Amino acid sequence: MTAIYKRELHSYFNSMTGYVFIAVVSAFTGIYFMATNLFGGYPYFSYTLTHLSFIALLTVPILTMKSMAEERHSKTDQMLLTYPVTVTGMVMGKYLAMLTVFAVPLLLSSLCPLIILANGTGYPVTDYATLLAFFFFGCLLTSVGMFISSLTESQIIAAVGTFGALLLFYLWPNLVSFLPTSAPLTALGLLLLLTAAALLIYSMSKNRLVAFVLEIIWIAAVAGVYLFAKDKLESLLPKLLGAFSCTGALDNFGLYSVFDLGGLFFYLSGAALFVFLTVQSVQKRRWN
Image 1 (cartoon, one colour):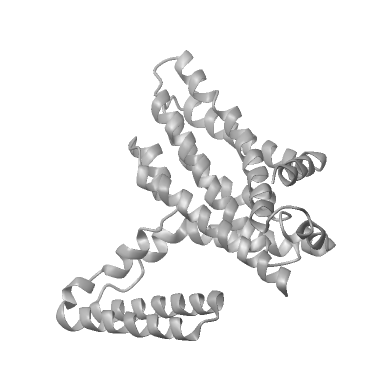
Image 2 (cartoon, helix red, strand yellow):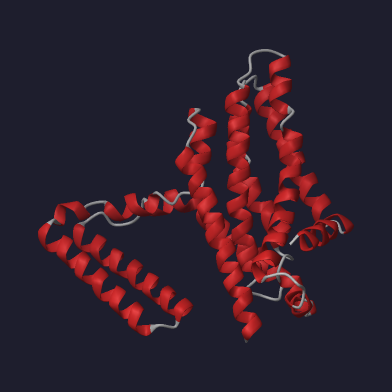
């Protein structure tokens, strides 16, 4: 894994990808910092970081688009699979290299709270806690981009697909507000979601019996709740899906000065899920 990590890290800085990513993120950080904190006089750098979440949506696809797609296009992925390292080790080496590049502009921006503190009242605890949350937020975005890159040979498709997925995550709180709140439509929505989950389980396990049994159990559970506790389904779907907002935890840190430990766990568990899916995608291609 260490050899893969060093190889990938060198590739980012032997090309323009790493430098472009760091330059763009640092430039926008400086612009927001100057406008909000220096000229605007707002003492919280954490507030500035919450606005940078959209910039991450634009820049992370640049960072992740070549991580897997380039290997597939140049057919060097077959050579990587012959290395004395597991598929998990190979994927983790690439992932950690991308996180290292992602962390560089954050390290540079860690000077901003000190600049605020040197010129007046500052809140470094809130600012640095939000920086930590922003890094974890980046871990999730990077894992999504790496997974999408593993599905295609085209870097352009990987970049566009990653941006589309991240934009969906960014708009998620607004989108779920349009979901129906009535009990019948909520029950229908839950059945559709659970059916999709059963299909996903089948696609990964190729076990029809397990997927079918789970589908029957879920249908029975939803039907039971609808018949005997219909009021419990009211507004359940927006509340349930709204919990998967990827910007909620960052807003808690940056806007409300709340150390959202559950939000950090959500970022890490989401990142672990997409890293796992990337490993499965590479494994599937390996055996095919």
